Length: 368
Ligand SMILES: Cc1cc2nc3c(=O)[nH]c(=O)nc-3n(C[C@H](O)[C@H](O)[C@H](O)COP(=O)(O)O)c2cc1C
Image (cartoon, rainbow, N blue to C red; front, side):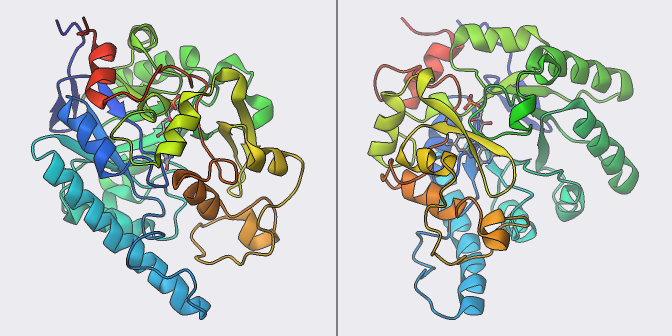
């Protein structure tokens, strides 16, 4: 029996209030997104770095200008391929794309996504202040900023309303104390209860209800991995949840099998924070790569910046940290010791690599 409410975002209604978080590079591609959408949730393709191991890009190209131009073009073409594949696998499902504001080809990726039939755009890693302008001709595409504080949501609402006469169709609130991937808080602030979901979600829900006539659902992300944590998020006032880590050890996840198995055998004791070239900490599984970074080494220090992919990058600008594109790409293709394996605190929630439908059935309470 489905005791969970459905989730309406803009003009799209998913039978279950479950969004699969966008996970780069190629951890959530067409396979995972379509499987979640087919199981009644919202599936999300991560747009980051898709061109890297596509037929459209040669990392050995010697001329840096040509290499960068080709990388961005490859990202665009590979995103088209991925979205078309996802739609072919899930003709009637609700499909979104996750595009980081911090990407230098942000505008092109947004344009490409709306031209290729996505239902929603999720956008974080910066405030997506230009998103309404970029999508103005496609009002059917729902726009969902990813934020970690009430303040960020207020800034977005005010600027979108004033400059574009539009409000977000929902907010994803990423809990920096539990989520996998880049965190929207400094490492030293992570213990502060004021940034936790118990504080931020009810405050944001009240602000949105008091300030605007149209309902703007709030989605809780970070640490949701089973039915009790899902129900807890809803009890705080969230209309749905966004889940990343739990969907990694699944048959349909697009990462290499070794990546899924590394996640499967990990438990919360293996979780560490790691600095990232974008300047914020990330949450990841401990491995040789992360140990080196946390010792202050710079893995791949002699590699050149091959794509100039980010607006702000300590590796490109100051030769600090590491190239995050190479690190994420290496891991998701199976080199789990020499790459960066992002993971949330809830790692270890699965006993085997499961079909997505089985995970979804457990989450929505229709198992057995
Ligand atoms: C491997 C991995 C990669 C991720 N990549 C991205 C990304 O490219 N963009 C983004 O906005 N969030 C990214 N995230 C965050 C997820 O979309 C999601 O919000 C988060 O995983 C939720 O927390 P959970 O892992 O505890 O479920 C990533 C998370 C993981 C675990």
